[in-house]
Amino acid sequence: MKYKAEIDIMPLKEILDPQGKAVKLGLKNLGLPEILDARIGKHITLEIEAENKGAAEEKVAFACKKLLANLIMEDFKYKVTEA
Amino acid sequence: MKYKAEIDIMPLKEILDPQGKAVKLGLKNLGLPEILDARIGKHITLEIEAENKGAAEEKVAFACKKLLANLIMEDFKYKVTEA
Image (cartoon, rainbow over all chains, first blue to last red; front, side, top):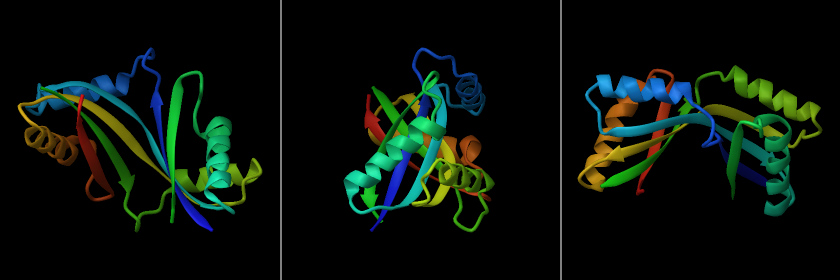
């Protein structure tokens, strides 16, 4: 069966996010000083062939740990749904 | 009141995503040929000060259109919740 995974990979709270700071400043200059904070990470969608949802989730967790996220600086969360 | 926005910005379906292709190949080489497709975009979280949820959503849509997303190559979706 086919599954779809939606993965968010974000910099850890303790880690500075210069790209987010730049976006916050840019939004302020655009007339949006109400944006108090901005943080920028990656959003990854995967299409997976797997026997069941559990197997698909296992593959996604493996992919995140081994390739997609740098666990020293980032954490990840994911949601798997039937495609 | 404070609101939190979760924004996903993804390359349009019609647009090639070389980064996604590279990730797909990398996962295959890691022993995950079951990943049929990968697409990579940005995930942005904003913290917003606004009077109500509608106003917060308006600000997020404005920020996406004016700064965060390149509408020629990307589309965006967002979800606003109370922080």
